[in-house]
Image 1 (cartoon, rainbow, N blue to C red):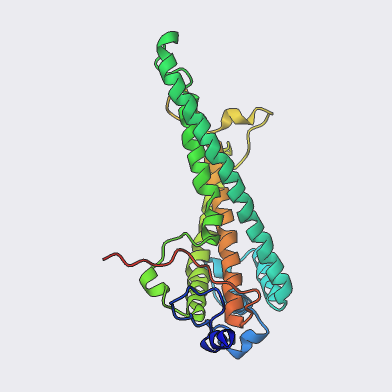
Image 2: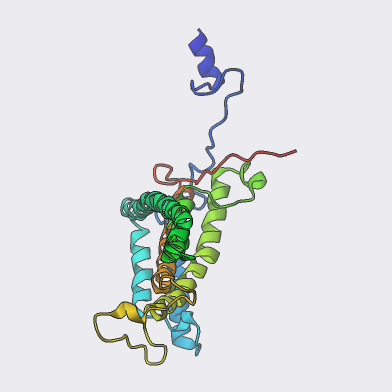
Length: 290
C-alpha cells in the first residue's frame, strides 16, 4: 500500500523524505517547430547562411565575408547541412568534440601539479640564493610558472564550458524550462558567441604565426633548423621566450570554439525533442544570499 501511495504521489525513490516530489520537465520532449522533427536547427541556420552568401556573391559588391567566402567555408556550410539530417552521426561528432574537452581536463590536472612543483622549486631556491651569491638562482622558473598558469586557463576552457562553470544570470536561469534554456543557449551561441570565436581564431592565427617567427612583411618563415631562435623573446632577464605561449592562445580559442559547437549541437537536439541526445548544461544550483 505504501508503494502504491508513493507511486500515486509521483515519488521515484530518490526524493528526500518530507519534500514534495519534483515534477519532470516535459516541455522539451516535443519539437518547438515541426521542421525540427527531421532537421537539426544548426542545419537550418547553415542553409540560410548559404543562401544569403550566394545572393551576396551574385548581386552585391561587398568586401565583407558573406560576399567573399573561401571554398572551405562553403564546404563547412554544406557539411553542417548534411550532418543536420542525420542525428546519429551529428551526435557522434558532438561526442568526439567533448572527448577533446575531457582530454584537456586531464592535461590541466597534470599542469596543476607542474605549477606546484615549479613554485616549490622557486621557494627552495629563494633560500639557496645567498649560498651561490646570486639574487635569482634559476630565473626561468618564474616565467615557467606564469606560462603554466596561462596553459591551465587556455586549455581548460573547453571543459569549463562543458561543465557549465561559466557565469549565468542564475536567478532567471534556474527557474526556466529546459526548452527555454535550450532556445537561449542556441541563439546566443550560434549568432553571437560562435561568430566572435570564429573572428578571434582568424586574428590569433596571424598573431601566433608572428610570435613563432613568421615575418610580418612577406609572410615567410626563417630558414634553418633552429627556428626557436626567431621566437619572440621576453624583455625580462632570464625569461623564457613568449612565442610558444602566444601560439597556444590560438589553440585555446580553437578548442573553445569547438566546444561551443558541441553546445549548439546539444541544445539543438533539445529543440528537436531528442532528449536521448539533447542536454542542458546544469551548473551549481542558484543560492539566494539574503
